Amino acid sequence: MNDTTIIGIIGVISSLIGILIAIIIYFLQKKRKSSMVNPIIQETKDQKGNNYQQRGNGPSTYQQAKIMNIYPAKNHNQSNIKEIIKEEVIFDGYIKIKHHNFYKINFFLKKGDIVKGSYYEIADYKIDVYILDGEQYSNFSNNSNFKKIKKYLDMKKGTFYIKVPYEDMWYIVFDGTYKQIDRKVKLKIDKIFKEIER
Image (cartoon, rainbow, N blue to C red; front, top):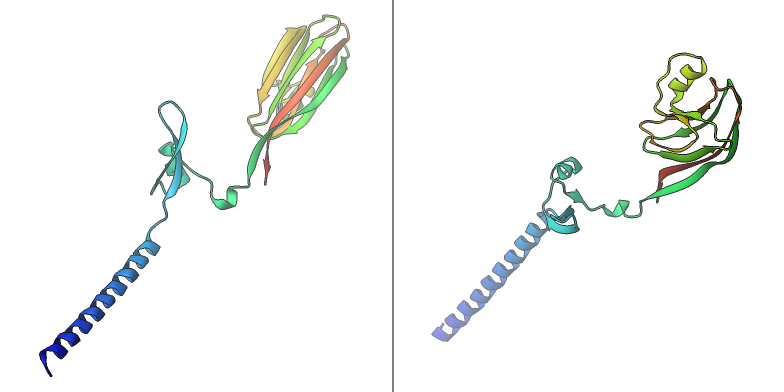
């Protein structure tokens, strides 16, 4: 075997070793990429209050994100969920409050629902208006002590507003118990609530 043949064999072996090393490096890099945690997109606010997004290995839970004032973007399964604020008219018309009596309007509300309205007495007489939950309305109607969640006393006209603190049957009461004359009231009530659409 001459020198030329030996050099040729060494060259072939060197080429094969180089190819083998390249293959090993390729598979090691591929394995490393597959084991890495995909970075999440985090939304936060700058000092001016503007929203912006940043990438990185952020907090692993929503609670941690909340503490850090960082909120992860919604995942793919939640992208079609929309929270819509709606408003509907519950009542728009006239009511009559007989003297020594009261008039009520009631409706079931969830926590966070908002009820607002306006009223005025046609003949300029004063009226008392209460907003009560189910338990307090029961006390009121049974002439027991009751707690007024909201009250508007001795007013000829006014507006009312409440963001419901808990789910219950709620009552708006126009009280003429201690009045000597019937009252006629123009009343409008609106409900504002959130609805989830998918």
